[in-house]
Image (cartoon, rainbow, N blue to C red; front, side, top):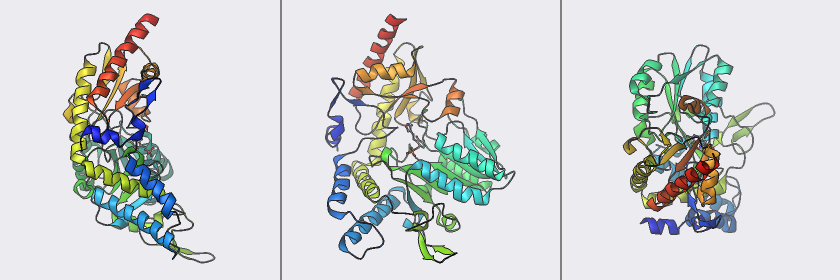
Amino acid sequence: MDIHDIRQLFPILHQEVNGKPLVYLDSAATSQKPVQVIEAINTYYREMNSNVHRGVHTLGTRATDGYEGAREKVRKFINAKSTEEIIFTRGTTTALNTVAASYAKANLHEGDEIVISYMEHHSNIIPWQQVAKQTGAVLKYLPLQEDGTISLEDVRETVTSNTKIVSIMQVSNVLGVVNPIKEIAKIAHENGAIMVVDGAQSTPHLKVDVQDLDCDFFAFSGHKMCGPTGIGVLYGRKQLLENMEPIEFGGEMIDFVGLYESTWKELPWKFEGGTPIIAGAIGLGAAIDFLEEVGLDQIEAHEHRLAAYAIEKMSAVEGLTIFGPKEASKRAGLVTFNLDDVHPHDVATVLDAEGIAVRAGHHCAQPLMKWLKQSATARASFYLYNTEEDIDKLVSGLLKTKEYFSDVF
Ligand code: 7TS
């Protein structure tokens, strides 16, 4: 599929914002949705809507088939061994909190260590802070190299035989770096720790294989990969999930309920209390079909090209600082930057007037902002529907921003 055909499938892109054609450069926050996903959700509500796993009636069977069919699509997409290992959640945040609240609280004790890094998103920091407070475990931070990458030498030094959990993002939502998860997982396992991966920014953009990574848990969100909001996935190794307690109790997740004792369903349903996110899962399944049709290799190569082009063009803007490694080969498709003394919110506001959507702020990574010595940054993030022309518009928008603020100051 060429870029023109891909763009045609995203209705939202074909509109004007503030009198200018929309240039959407905020896919790391949430991606846009192709017609296939919008239609799948529409068809679900028009033709299939019913609760799952209960009715014998035809609509109930259709909804159950759609929901469980989506689980199989997810399993194949990330190459998990079994659908028992695929738990639908609200998103990455809920998935990581499930590991923390269920696995970590039951298995960690005083003096045990949890290792994360300075570049983590708040969703992969705060749950571990809570676990540390409640169990007496110690939270340790992997340092970063000057360019924002993680060195395996530092991993070997930080992870010890006291480490029980290593939890790292595969791709940074700020620096764009791709972390060596497979190698980090190996070090974690050599020390008897489990490996948790925040895949929120990797799963949409590169081929994920949980067996090849050899991770124990892997979390991601549907809405960043062309799927709807409100659906995400927790992958967990079966033998770990089997020994974990659910964190939500109620309908759907039980086998037998007595007056004082109850038993749970088998995997994965024991972790899916209440009516599940049926339309969301079906929408995510349609997103996976779409991404596979385009091809993850093609998407990754396209974004690499865009990142290289953006770094080249943006580096030529005087006074613009790019954070993270300069080599496009070390990063995924996003560029975080600041422009002279102009506050990133002002940058984003001027760009918005040009129809260009970028994100400004701390990007839910306040420890990383501290490490970068910035209170906030601006970020342009790309996906399969972006073009070099979008980046040209961004650069001319940035030049306009400079001009505007040089008049003001
Ligand atoms: N982990 C990473 C690496 C993320 O980038 C995000 C969201 C999350 C976890 C949380 O995902 P959620 O779907 O549960 O909210 N990141 C961003 C961002 O960079 N800008 O807006 C949201």
